[in-house]
Each structure stands twice: as C-alpha cells, then as structure tokens.
Length: 371
Image (cartoon, one colour):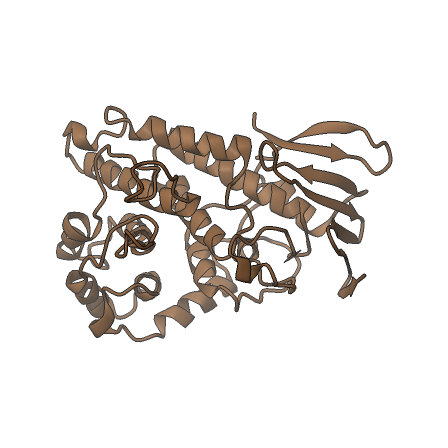
C-alpha cells in the first residue's frame, strides 16, 4: 500500500499518525459530461492557423478537440502532416534557446494513442508523420538534467515527465506495432526502471513543483498519458502519484477552493484568488463525470487543462471526492515536502478549512474573511 508522508492530527485527540493514501474506486462514473462537451466545443470552434502550425501554442489541443468531436477531420490531418519540429525538448534558457518542444510533444503523444486504431480520424499518413518526424524522443537516452548544463542541473518535473514520458510511450508504440529492436524495448533499454524510479520518488518524497502555476498542469497531463497508455507497472505507479497529488488537494481544499503555498514563479506568489489553482481545473473536469450534486464548474483560468482532464480515463479515488466536499469531524494536517523544507499546514472542520500562514484565511460557505 502507498502512504502519504504527512502527519495527521485529530482535532479531538491530537494524536499523530500516518495516513494511507486512498486508492479504492467504486463510484459509477458517467461516460459523458456536459462540461467536457463544452470544453471540446470551445477548442474545436477555433480555426487552425496553418501559418503558425509549428509555433508553441494551443494548436495540438485544437486538433485534439476536433478529433474528439470528429470535426474538420481533413483539415486536422492536413495540419499534422504539415507540422514541423520547432525546437528541442527540455527547459528553455540562454544556452538552450530552442527548448520547450516537450510542450508540443506531450499532446501529440496523446493524439497518437487516443486515435491510433481509428484510421478514419487519424489517417495512416498522418500517423506516420507523427511517429517518424514530430515525436522526436526515442530510445533509452533518459535525461534528467537541463540541456546544456553538463548534467549538473536537474530539469524540472514537468519537463522530465513530458519529455521522458513521451520517449517511453513512443518506444512502447513501436514495440506494440511490431518493432522488436532493443532500442525501443523499454525494459532492455532501461526506460521502464528509470520511469518507475522517478515516479516512486515523486509519490514517496512529494513533488518538487508542488502547487506551481502554471507547471503543475503540465505535470498532471504528462502523468495522465502514462496512466492511460503505459505498461501495467508504469500505469499503476503513475496512478499512484496522481492519487497522492489529489489526496493532498482534497486535504488542502474546500469545495474546490484552493489557496496553497508555493507558486514557483515569483509573480504568481501574489495571487489571492481561491479559484485560480490549475489542479482545481483538472479536478472539476473529472468530477463533471461523477454522480454528485452540481458544483462550481468555472474553468476559465485554465480551460486547456480541462480539455486534457476530460478526455483521459483517470478518475480520483472515492475518498478524495468525499473529502473535497465533506471534511468530516475535521483535522489538522501537515504535508511534508522533503528534508529541511517548510510543510503545508491545514486545519479543517465540518464547514471550513484554514491555512495557517502569514495571514489566516477562513473559507466558510461562500464567505471568505482575511485577518
């Protein structure tokens, strides 16, 4: 079993204990959701800019939405066939000015796997271009370091997961389609064990980029790819990491309002709104399929993440859904983030959650008061 490395103190007993991460799933999730359709339609209604196909942006998501709705299929395939590789993977910085291609690589991997066996939607020629040209990472050259740092600076979680997850999945696609070369065997080339080790570190030690805006959205999206399309071992471990992240979200939020510490980028630290958290957008997308009472489905701050969350098969564990809306008898919880790092601390009661910080913030019903 997986355990969350936190201390949980009952408000009544003040007794410290470790808390098991919930994984049980018995909820009968719906197969369709109005929110998902709205998001698909929003992206699918956008025109494909054939002059800027290879630029970083939302073009892959627009193509994904059109495929999901079986709309403008000829243009979608034409666009993918005309796309060119615009750069390289890994963090963009002074010595890696063409970096960040993994932001494109990841959604193209999603498209490949979701529509692999639907030649009427994803044409064979289009798929060939995806595999042979656009999905640039393959083989066993697993990379954790930021490009051009002599291996001395670790890249960030979102870049590692987007790049190495896509490399792993391209290898897997090749093997599943008859290529027996050791280059693409994720077991013999070491990719499987390295991905598993990285995911295990995340679930055991917590995330480095926890609660970060905007990067946690891309971390979750990359994990969703692995959970949906990887081998059983890797899929299970990716699901465990997602369960870990969503359990900490449930403990630190109240009715989908979330104001956690650490935004990673300094300009994001000034955010005071309770509805700008990117993880909340994924959670709302998933919960739109749940047989529960209506809730606030505002996703205007990060609709792109709702698109990915809606079309992938992952759904949160039962207890996560429960605790998001019902705090039971309350708790005092400390979420650790590694040796010598400051933990997140939350106190909850039946109808509120409090974030002990430099300020004290209470959420009660629809009322927010700062003191």
